[in-house]
Image (cartoon, rainbow, N blue to C red; front, top):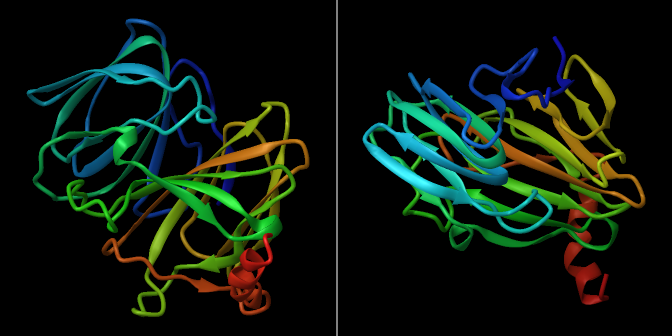
Length: 271
């Protein structure tokens, strides 16, 4: 079973060719102007993250028009649309649009809703050459008006030459408050698009590194993970998690976890 695969960017709904996760799934939806994708959520909740462009959504009896606006993931905060379980939906492109459909099992009875850039919090994680910028789109912290059963979703931008998700961490066991079980996926883009990055993934079965190209995905049912951008390029990843609940707790790689404790000192020194 592969943990890292390319994701097709063909027109329509592009499904994963392999998926080692039990809870999480992902589709990349590419629509032209006026093209409509229809489906049903079934026993899953879906967060449709507008990666670039605009779309109209009809979800059950509700309609949301002209959702989106940024031209690409590298040009501002996102719009997103929450599609609850047991709901028919249709998405129509307003011009060309690209949407990431993140999903997980759910029995939450709630109405669909739109997440606007004003709902998205941003900030900086890390320090020195492991500094990265983030957007929190759908989290359990600070967004009580955005209900979800399992999904936790955000975006990270790793600058040229920097490391991200560093120190490497895992969240594979239910042992609160120390660690919480969550599967996770990273959907990658690179700017400029001909660039690359690297990601390392390690669990009991593998200890591998993969070349990040534009539109590739790392799927993590467990294990430690980290990312680095090649000099001259910015890597982006849409990250999304699902577990038994939405309380997060991670464990750092014991070999390099000490680096995380230097963040405060490095920031005081201006790094």
